[in-house]
Length: 353
Image (cartoon, rainbow, N blue to C red; front, side, top):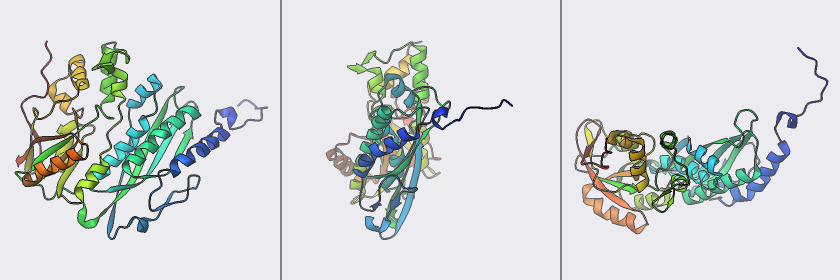
């Protein structure tokens, strides 16, 4: 072992504590702007505080979810566009709890990087705050970790955690799904935050620059469109309508996510001609030479959320969601089966060999 004659400090190891403290100071007003009934205190404590009684619940069940943004981060880093990636982070968590009828109450974020950039960090947090406001959740706290040598220069990772509540009698758990029910789909905002490892592989194999155009915009900008947050329209609908089941269409696409809300003796019969995916999906399919089955089990293919409702209510609920600004597709119906998705027709034209 070599003798050390140097007085080492944390900054010598690449960690700037003062910069981290400045970052927290800068973002505290942003976090405070997301406060809702029940929020107690501000950033800086050891734990975030929330008073559930102030939210007005009588017999609540707490519902929680945690998620990240995955390799979509690499695209944001490459293009130096970090302003919406925080919306993705919030969306991936809050959409996972709204499917059970839970109102998001608070959100926590984890931001890890090799060397903290105040500018990039601020941009990311701006997006997280915007996402929290769209979801009605309070940004209650988080963790910023500066870890030299753990990440490549300029790289970072994000994780989020949210907690929501639903009255015990209003929990959406798919137990009432029956044959004949109608399947509704709510449009996505593009690829959202799943399947990006395959997206990167396609860009690499085709030597496609993110600046190349598709449908009037760059491919990079199209792929960075933030994940839709469906909280407010769903909360509005479930106040007056019986929603039997909801699925957030994430990794695994329609093929893997819809069965999560199906009884084992029923299938979802989906007509692939009932909606038209955004051009980015056809671009990915054709340039990656991806089979239809792979597309439907990897990407959302234009549908970010699926709802199962009583047939007699389907058209009314569709109209209500349309009035709330959603683009809604009547995708099919529930039939006898074995808990799977069965497709009718074709969503994409197969590429030429």
